[in-house]
Image 1 (spheres, rainbow, N blue to C red):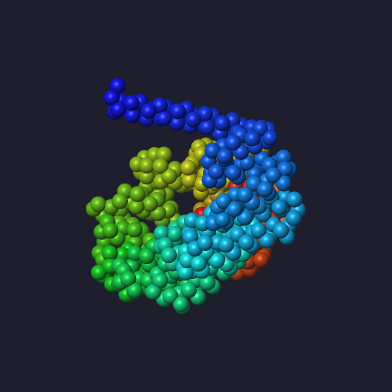
Image 2: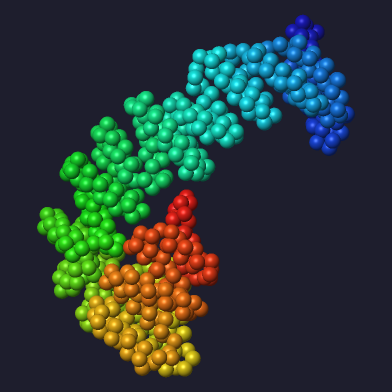
Length: 608
């Protein structure tokens, strides 16, 4: 047998025995873990000690061996083993933590603290060792020592920010908000990719107090580092979280100017502000694009449209506007259409313009003319066209042209079927039947529409179905209800004096009928429309106090709270009424909205 074959056989035998040895060792590790998990610490300690003797620098075997000894309260053997390990590996400072833990378990706290201090004092200028020691302290929930470790490590490595993220996490665990934010911002200065994860963390964890601290530190950082856009963008995000769109816009403008942007961030911010009904901030944002970016911006036309919309909603969604305000908006709509033309691209603006003319300026002929022209535009979006038909149907109804109204509603119903627009058309046709006194058919339609995917349509359908049932279900006398429905139509048609006369005649001729609360409720709505808020509150209060069990009580509470919140600016009174609604009328369909508004007024953070 030649030498090559003999050598090959020797290597094979060595490799074979090595595999067997490793296999046996793996079995012993598995058995030791099993003993440890079942609480058989003496058997587990014997096996871990054996495994450690075969691989003396294996920290896992060593730590499990020490844990077994501590579980057995064999502190003497444990201390002897740790001191021996420290002697063998003096640079492994985490062993001092193991010794401190063992001493602390014996209530030798001063000696334990001395070992922890020694671990930090002996810390080498090595990033891995620093992290390892800090993690050892974190395992013991000794956050102060972990912080001390990282802070000393930063000095040893001459890098103030290197452990910023870990330090921020430790200060978070300790509840030290200021320090936590300080180190998170250090970390952000090192890695811009942290911005999204930090925003997610802040959003899930912060209250107003933490946001105040974040804002203060960001403003300070921006003064110190004016060229760091990450800090500016984080400040903008912080303002957005707190719905302070005006401040967010101020800094977003500075970013846009510095980067010579096309206005996209400004447009997004304006759109968010508009959605959240901060009309002043929205108007400011869209005006910036129009005046500063000009026609070269791809957002120019949309900004002009949205600015008009924001200005319109600012006066129509609030209770504070004059006829001059309306006239100015009207002129701006006319100017926009003259400049941009009447086409499918401006159809939405034409719809808004017509709505202004019909509902606020009471110029129904002009509103009808605009919509008729718009509906027939080439290339118009079919959804916008359908919305225009519904609005046009309303205007025809207001002028008494009932047949034209129902024809338009029916067209949309046919074209959109089970779509929300189809449901809306069906609801308006059903309400038209209600106005005409055909209560059986109207109620049947309302019952079907209770299942509408639109919450608004569903709620209105439920209200009207219950209302009809409540007023004709017992005695089948429909005359008072027919008079009331006629009064509602008169209100819809802006024939307010005739509506009041009709309502008063019901009270006179049918003093015992159950419509008294409904009459007061409708009068309150009329007074609100006339901006006579004192009388409106008086009527709503009458409904709530005299008819607390009737179906209008929760509606009256909600409407009254809304008036106090938005028209009278009495937030505390509004909060009181919203709370009363969701507490006393928990089954009301308005209870959820009332609770949400209550929480907003209280200052709670509401996630959309």
